[in-house]
Image (cartoon, rainbow over all chains, first blue to last red; front, side, top):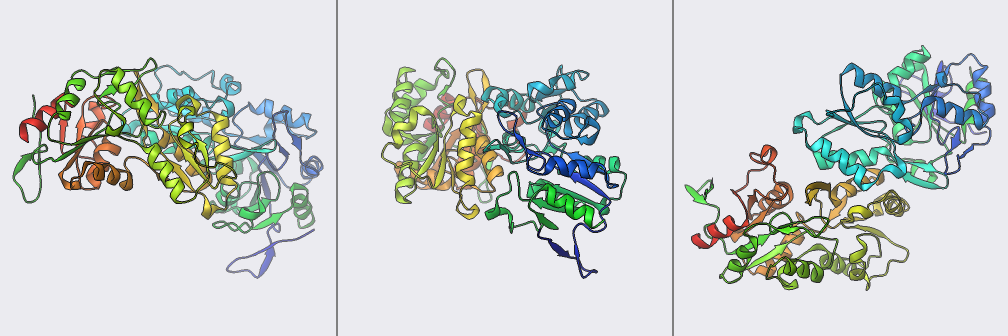
Length: 280
Length: 280
């Protein structure tokens, strides 16, 4: 097992895992790899989650998954062998529904058909915003044009575009595929507006996850495979950010990365949990 | 007929059309509106082109059309009643093919199937760049992912993304639809690279059109329905830029526009040609 260190201004050398009081975990690429036939758990992750669950360190799965409900997502993880319930998961759809209610917004929904029922309590008539989630194969030319026309019909200063996640791409089976953030960028450009990300790496979204952990943000670590959104996003908010060498991690670009220096690298979730439990 | 004026530093008030020695015309939204069933000529445009053709003022149709060959494009315009040949048209595909040959590039082509034959002389094996054109309904999730993976497989500093036009949207029948520029933005974001536009408003592309006219750039006017790419793009290079109130022009946003002040507005191409011919 390799242990990685980081140096801060006032401290000598310490491991990223010392003093950690709460853990946020990305899911896809950390617990399991997704794929057309349901994907598969990453070796050692099922046991790692179980050890974390029986430890004194609270954790939440913090995912930008927006193609299915939290309950279905938990059920899928359970099927893979993980001891996980809906309450362990923080993801953008419920946060987005809350925001729409608070702001009295009526969305045009460019979301995966499977999550449409989650928005059942929200009026979509005469829309005054666009809400995007990962649609994968449902990112069709006509669906994109419909969302685009809704935005364009609004006055430029009133164009509200929400994206459930700002991710660039993710691993789907053996393939890397475009994520919702890329498609949201297309609409941003076409409509001269700025997307608001409801999901990682948005501060409000991470804040919600931290509140559920009940710890201070500086005592938290985020462990993920996305060096920009997971690692860099967490670090920008004062958390530690640790990069796993699974999922969409690619040695040639992510280690070292041109912009982001993780607080640590681990081979996989099992190694991260080993370090956390042996140092706390 | 309304005549619009502009004021420069050293001159009192003059019409945009005085002293014009060469004319560039956008096509879609100026000569005709496109549509699923072939579209239709805009009233007065067929006659306007004919009058321009028999005048002493040289002109070129300057289009970012990249869904069909120049010959087919000319044939379509002829069918609509326009007296137009391939030589009257400047569009990105031939310019892109030249550039690929000059730079010895092997493209992954994300282009409309109808223009694939234009790239027949170019090797696409082991691609070292991505070339995008407007694909309309062929902008599928899988086609976007294939282009994305090609770019991502390259070292970040070597990622070359060419887009035949940087347009945001255009009018297709009664609908406004996303243009290639928006989809290129999605790949830019996902792959951390910058697209190179081969088409309007790229300087090299406009320079090529001006060279074919054989006049000085400051004696040229570009007439188009896209206030950013046509009007603003032309002005940025020292041409005059005139906005037509046809095609995708929308009064509420384009007159006045928040960023660009055209040298003139005209109701349609017929009015523009009337002004040009009566003032020269």
